[in-house]
Each structure stands twice: as C-alpha cells, then as structure tokens.
Amino acid sequence: MKKNVNYLIILLTAIFIVGCTNVEDVTVTDKETDLQEVTINNSETEKTSTLSKDELFKGYKLIEVDGGNLSGHREPNVVVDIGFGDRHYYAFTNETGQLVRVIADEIILQNDHTEPVTSSGRYYADEAKVPGVERADLDEGHVIADSLGGVSNAYNITPQDSTLNRHGDQAYMEDAIRKAGGATSFEAIITYPSTETQIPSHYQYTYTIKGNKIVDEFDNRNPDEINKSLGLTESKSTNANKSTSSNKPNVLNDTEDISIVDTDGNGQVTIKEAKAAGYSMPITREHWLYKYMQDRDNDGMVGE
Image 1 (tube, helix red, strand yellow):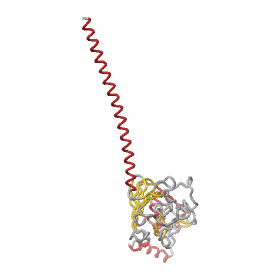
Image 2: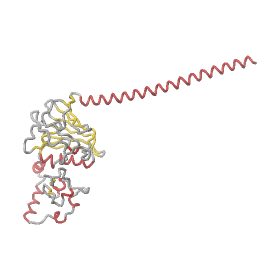
Image 3: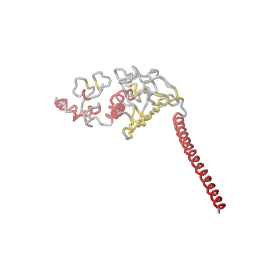
Image 4: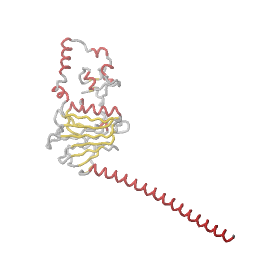
C-alpha cells in the first residue's frame, strides 16, 4: 500500500512539473509575439511615410530658396518649401522652370501677433520679379497668399491679372480660407499656353474647408472682361445708366441697411457683395460700408 502511494506521489509531481513548464513556455511565446508585432507595425508605418515622401518628390530635386528672394528665376524640376516659418507648403516646377503645382497638407493662417509682419500685412516688402510681372495689367500674384502663410520668392509667385488677383476668384478663394480659419488638402495646378512663357493661362485650386471639398477653376484673365463678354454685366450697366439719367439717389446709401448688402448675413461685406449691390470700387474710409469690410493693408481703401 505504501509503495502504491509513493508511485502516486511521483506521478502527480511529474504532471505538476510538466504543466508548469508548458504554462511558462506559452507565456514567453505570447510576449515575444506581441513585441514582434509592434516592431513590425512601427517599421511598416515608417516605411510607408518614407515611401510617400519619396514618391512625392520623385523626379524632383529638393532645394532651399529664401522666402524673400526677389529673383524671378526658377530651377527646372525642383521642389521648394514655400511655407513661412514652420509651415510646409511644397512648390514644383517642370522641365522649363514653370511653376506647375503647389501642395499643402494644411494651410495655417498668418499670425500678425507672433510673426514678423509688415504694416501692410506682408512677410516681405516685395515679391519675386517673375518674367511677365512688369506688365501693367499683371500683379506679382501669390499662389498661397501672405495671409495664408506663403512666402514671396519665385516659387510662390506667378504673373496674374491684377483684377483677378485683387477682386476676382483668386481674392475670393483666399478670403474663404481666411474666414474658415484655414484649410486642408490644398493643391494648386497651374497651366500655361506654351513652354515659352511664365504667365499662366489657367489655375485650378482644390482644398477642404470644414470637411467640404472645394474646387475653384479660373482663367488668368480680367473677370470683368470675361463677364462682359458673356453678357453678365449688361443688365447692371443698364440699371446704372437709368439711375444716373434719372438722378435718383442710391437707396442703399440713404438707408445704410447692411442686411441688403451682406447677403450671407455674417456681419461682413466682401468686395463681391458690395459690387453685386451696385457699389463701385474702391470703398474709402469715409464710406458707410468701409467699417464692414476688410482693409488688409490699412490704407483707407478697399477694392483699390
């Protein structure tokens, strides 16, 4: 009987030892597996990020250009960071040095309280002299404006119709982004009539504001002339002539009713809204509408 008990004790001890060994093996294996999976996942993330950037700049040479460089020359097939400060906005040129694409993951508005901004709301006193800006009807147009965090070298400047830049679609787009507090997934595609010029013929902007994807497309032409050619200004001209010939006062000037001009009801009046209401530009400091409009260069005029 005693012998049988001894055999039973030995058997139970062996089972207990084997069981403990299996448990320890499983525990160690699980830890190693978890650690290995984390390492692999981190590696794949870094690899994806690297490949994404490599793919983004593939075929282009990344160079640095001072944000205030006034030279109008651009190197061919390069990419340049045109974001002021810590912003990262990338501009791409083609084989002839034309600025053809600008991208930004996030548009961060200018902060005139923490950034070195001039009294006119600019980072630099002047803009790059890209061939074409010497024409009287063309501005040194920013692809990404100072107010949106863009610099003023040739990789962010194109010769742009003055009216388009100051009062047209370009100005409206910039104003929309400012009012929204910024934008994401920004991309500008710039096209040209030939490889022999640095004056674009067309712009396409794609960006996201508050979850809404927006696409703005327009030609590099005077929008007033375009509207006139389409017959969109004829009725306004006719009404204006009638008003002048009858010497009737402008009802809006008499009533100063902001709700009639401020069509979106946000308490501010844009140049577009003022023009639609029949007011001619510029609006000066003495005009009752002035206090409802943005005079970014603080010169006492809006829409000059």
